[in-house]
Image: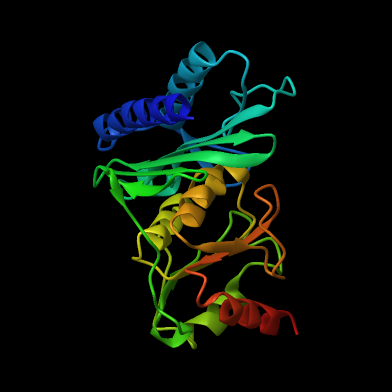
Length: 261
């Protein structure tokens, strides 16, 4: 497993360096699915090509699923899931919070997760059964036992103006019950911040597997808990996620349920 982890770390850092080099330069913006909120830059595409080419060369028998479509599927037991820039809107605006997210699945289970946030040079790594680290130092989730003393995070999907399931009802309920709610626009770092104790919880709708795959194992290996809104085990290919330190999980589920009643 260590060879896979080291490869992901190496290429995540290289992609992060490219992002920082281009951060304050003019970018070419295009739109996905004719949605003005769902943007992609040439740096997203360049980083994805960089990562995918590297992994294809290192592990030619592995499959790849990447946000901008560079992957391929041969029904391998091994699947890399890649978000070249999680937080593209932040990146396009020069807002200094975004990440490279690289996860590896084996027979459907995430076994390696690497999330690199280049603005702070923070490298989060998790290996199934091997713990989680931030810049090589072990990390654990917080010990907050109650939601009213917790700082949690969420986000709003690109279809926020197109569906009744836009998360605003959940946001309204949570902001009245917890200490604070943050909306940073980068699900992978939100989850990693749970893993290292900065945030106590997170929920969101309509995320994609490349948003959460890598960070999910980091959270679990740091002692956290993840699930669907109804408490079923997390499906990274599903359309919802609840994550937290494990101590406020039931409180969060109850608030999510109350929004549906």
